[in-house]
Structures are given as C-alpha cells and as structure tokens.
Length: 420
Ligand code: GLU
Image 1 (cartoon, rainbow, N blue to C red):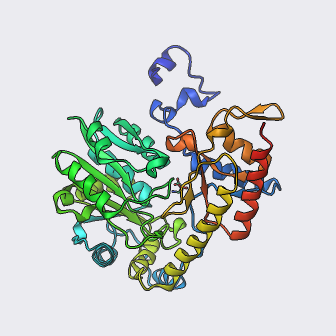
Image 2: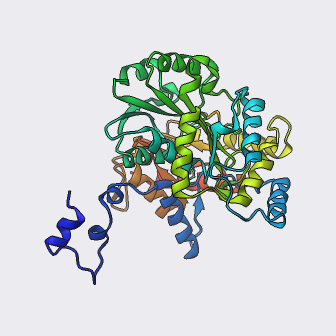
C-alpha cells in the first residue's frame, strides 16, 4: 500500500493536478460506496434528465412524518432549542426512549444507557469504533445491510460472513453461529426484521441465538431493530429480553422507518453503561450531539404508542397490502425464487436463473449486471444483491405507491422475458 509520503517522495503527488487516487487516504480508497445510496442517486440523476424511472432502490417510507411530530419540531424552534444539546441527547428524549423500551419491548434502561445520534447508521458506526480493535472478528450473517461490512472494515475488524439460505428464510441458525465463533470473536451484527430480506426471528429462534451468545463471555451483539414497527406477524421480539445476554446486547433503533422520519436523522443505542459512555465520548469528538430540533421531534415520536397510533397502524397496514400485492406479482414472473417477507419493506428475490442470458448483446453475469439492466432497459432502480453479500439476488423496496409498484413489476417482468 503506498503511503502519502511515498507518493510525494516518488513524485507521484502533483499538487496542481490533484488525483483522487493520490490524495485520498487508503482507509477511504479501500471503502466501498454505499450501493443503496449510489443506486438512489443514479435513479435521481436519470429522473432529472427526464427519464421515467421508478425507484425501488432506497429503503424509505413514502409517508409524511406525523403532524404532531412536525408540530413539536416547530415548537422547538419557537422555544429556542437552537443551542448545543448535551452530547448523548436531551434528557427528556433519553427518558422518552427508556419509556419506549419499557412500553414496546419490556426492557428497562436508564437514560445514561441511551446515546442519541445522527441516525441509526451513526449509532452503529460509533458502537463498532468503540468495541472493535484491529483484528477482532465480527460475525455478519449474510445477506446483511450494506453498511455493516464497511463499518467493520473501517474499524479494522475482520468480517466473518455466515451465509444463510433462502430455503431457511435467510436466517442464521444457532449451529452456524456457534461454528463461526472463535476466541477472537467480539461482536455479531444482527438484525430483525432484516434489511434486505424482510425476514424476522421468532422469540424461540432468538432464545436459541441468545443461548449461543451466553456461552461465550466476551461476545457482544449489535441488535439492529430499526424496522421494529414494520412487522406483519405480531409483537416485535428483542434479543435483549433474555437475561443471560442482557448486558451484552446493544440495541440500535431510531425514528426513521417506523415514524417516516428518515430525513430527521435520529437513531439511538441502548447499551451497558460503559459502552454508552464510550460512544458518548466518541460522539463528543465527532458531531458534539445531533440536531436539537430533530431531537425534540423524536421525543414526541417516542411518546406515540405503536399499538394505538393511527399513523403507525395505518402505515403498517398499507405496507402489508403492498407486500401481498408485490408477492403475487413476483410469483408471477418465471424463474424467480422469492420468499414472503414478514417485516420491513423489502423483497430479496433470487434472480440467478437469468444469469448467462443476454439482451441485445448485453450479457447478465451477476446481480450488478441485473440491477443495471433493469435500470437501463426497464427504467426501474433496484439494488444489486452483491451489496448485501448475496450475488444471486436483487433488493426491491416496496415503499412506494401501489400504482408505481404495479408498473415497476410489469416492466421488470417484460425486461426479464426479453433475456435469452
Ligand atoms: N437503510 C436504507 C436502505 O437500506 C437507507 C439507505 C441506507 O442508509 O442504506 O435503503
């Protein structure tokens, strides 16, 4: 690996002609771009050029933030909540988060265990920075959410991928986990409901996973529950509910998905106090704290009970209707292998039976070819499965209107039928 000094000493650095490869750190050069965001940017760009692109790429509710939450934000401005908030978040927000954990998950936390950050992504980033030393092993059940891998790599952790199968609803088994654990394993990156598969673990499945974790005393779990409220099978089950792993599970959640608040950028962790303290220390050097106004809005959102809030119930009902519709449409396309997701708002169909086929001399060899083929020929933006560690699949987000979903699936079907 060439260092900056090496480049300079060898005349490879030309200050008047700054080349990306020459000036950017190896850390960033070696990092993959977020494919979910890259495909979304691509779709936006094509739309701006006047192309009729339907974007099924980003995972973002197409609903508006509840009115009451918007009002709380407006009030925060009027009340002059415009100064630096405390680093881990306002006390009332952290208390509201504790209340949420008690109400929705029957988990007891103290405000000092909560750190509020600029989205669950930053929460996960900080957590990994705080737990992982170079060479520590991190188990990532695959398929995984796109940023887990890069977040671990940037901390110089070693990603240990545990491949799950469509036949097992993309869920990792306790036996698989046990087999992947070594004395160097520090963390498991776990999510339920899962992005990109939409699958979720039952209480019994979680209990079995907790039993494996409990047997290894230096092992921690990052439990990503950001899709908690988009669950079509019943009550959300948290991994942290099992006493034997209670002090080794760090639960990550936020307001983006469940409350249609992606742009507000509020995520949080509930962690053992020493871990929360470490994340707080890091955050103090990185962002100081997250946006004061967004925090006040989030505190209001936390008080909405998902069991009775019309906004949340309505959103979930609509997502479920769309899921059922898209499932029928996908089942209607020859050659796809597809599971019925139980939560989140994604499908992750296996499209590999089309690999090796061509259209107009363009051969589809992998999920990237497939995603670009669908973008260019069908004007539908998806995300390649390789971004999530499974090249046989592509991810479709159904967080858009039924009308657009119908049209997108019609186009996909037609484009796939053209492959020979
Ligand atoms: N989490 C969403 C997704 O997977 C938003 C984009 C991102 O941060 O990756 O599409």
